[in-house]
Every structure is written in structure tokens, then in C-alpha cells.
Length: 57
Image (cartoon, rainbow, N blue to C red; front, side, top):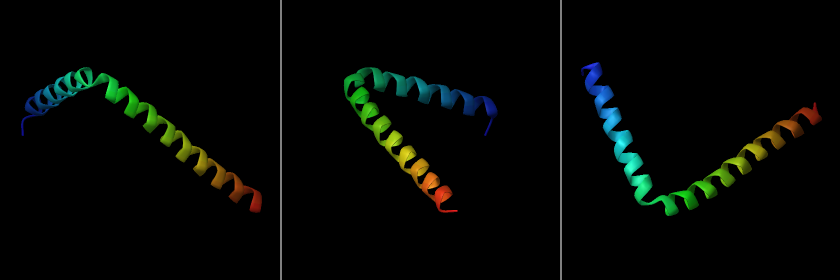
């Protein structure tokens, strides 16, 4: 496919995504807050496992 067509398709998808986020902004913000908490928890668990592994050596 033409590279300009890919860029145009990406731009259209970004604009549609931003419109969707703006329309559902309160639901999206609640979801993002929950996702950020889950990601921080997973990263903390991974760092804890690495730390315990280092201590055992």
C-alpha cells in the first residue's frame, strides 16, 4: 500500500479515537486510573521477584 495512504489511515484512526475518548471521557478516565494501578502493581511484583532472586544468590 502507498505510504501516504497508511499515514492518512493512521491519522483518521487517531482522530476517531480522540473523538471517542472525548465522548466517553469520564468512563475512560476511570478505566485509565484502574489500569495504571494494575500496571504499577505488576511492575512492583516483577521488581520484588528480581530483588528476591538477587538476594538468594
